[in-house]
Length: 325
Image (cartoon, rainbow, N blue to C red; front, top):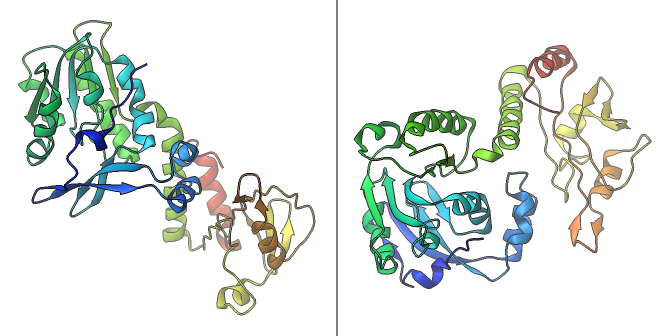
């Protein structure tokens, strides 16, 4: 197994900065780990890999915020590439060089060619790589992955795409196009071509599609959506305008029953709910702590649907086979 280098030990302690980017350090807090755990995102299951008080490195865009880090989720989701990288390697996306440093002294790695779209990053990160690249394996070029294939005059044993700061459903469409475009540049059938988070496509696309459907319903179907954190169910109380408008009167099976309709919901709890109870009772359940894990038991209510749109919404659910609800 190949192991990552500690970037905080490689990079200088002073902040590196260009006109659009800077590379800085930060510490992991208990609060941050808890936010990861409750994030309802692809990294929520990796929260236990974060170490409170550990220092990490960040590439930050002055316009878009954090673009990359050496957080555990970045390491874990790139590990498959590290294990398969060999021979002459072509990487699209420079970042902070997280996946480059572990390969520099590997005997079965002959060369590492990196193609970076942004013209500033090579001047920011390149000098740091050069201080470690004692065998001169790394070459950094400026270019766009989608139109660079014709500019390459050699073939590679490994090709990897890591050009997305955040994964969307469009990212997977781009991955498929890039794999098809660059597969002819592999030397033989033993070559390896992959993209960051490509093997998580099913889970991530399902989450993305589900979120898109919720947004669609909010925008087009005229219904209200609530998401309950474990600490608070709806933030509803008897004095709120929303509470008085909807008049919740209890919970039945997988429905929340109102005076005028029953509403499809996703509700999970470590405590069983098998009778009609009030929203105030749901709040009490949601605030129950698991002392062993030091976290609240989960309770989520994901949407509320008005009766006149119920049939239309259910038809959309049935017709969208990519979404599992």
